[in-house]
Structure formats: C-alpha cells, structure tokens
Length: 116
Picture 1 (cartoon, rainbow, N blue to C red):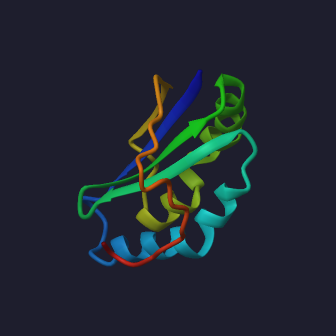
Picture 2: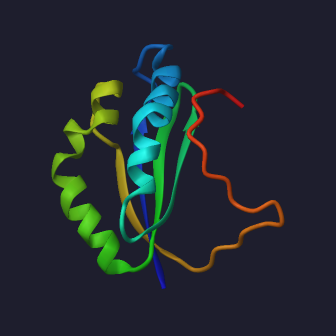
C-alpha cells in the first residue's frame, strides 16, 4: 500500500508575484531535490493562483512517509515555501493511496517554471 501526504499553504494573503516565485522555486530547486528522495514514488506541486499552493506526495509505504514527515513537519513553518508565502502550511494531511493509474501518455518528470 502506498502512503500519501498533502501539504497546503494559503495564498490569499500573499502578493500577486507569489505564483511565479513558487513556479521558479519548484523549477530551480524543489523538483531536483525530490527526484532523489528515497521512498518517494512521485510528488506533484499544485496551485490555484491567489488561493493555495500544495505538494502532494506518494510514498512507497507508511515508513517512508513517516520518515519524511518526521523531518519536514517540525520545521514546516520555516520551510522554503513557508518563507516564500510568509506563512506556515494550513494543512498537513496523511492519506492512503488506494491506487495509481498511469495513462497512455505516461508520466512526465520535468521542472518547468512556465505557466500552463
């Protein structure tokens, strides 16, 4: 069984330039770091401009998720995204990943800071 983790930050209070700053952060730093994280199946970064930004993680098992959470959660308020947004995450939530489907186009791993 895979194990999920969602971490979300509110963007309603942030300046309008935050969306591009977050894209740049993912593209220039975060993407490469998570490609090397042991125990991680994949991570997606999602955003609704002016509303929220989040990371969704799918780990190979509970132990891998727990190991990551033990490192991340205590310092979440000082994480790079918290520093960019000016606030701690509003949600840190574990979940069970019931299934993963990869469509016929396959999965793509690319650090793009471009919109769209």
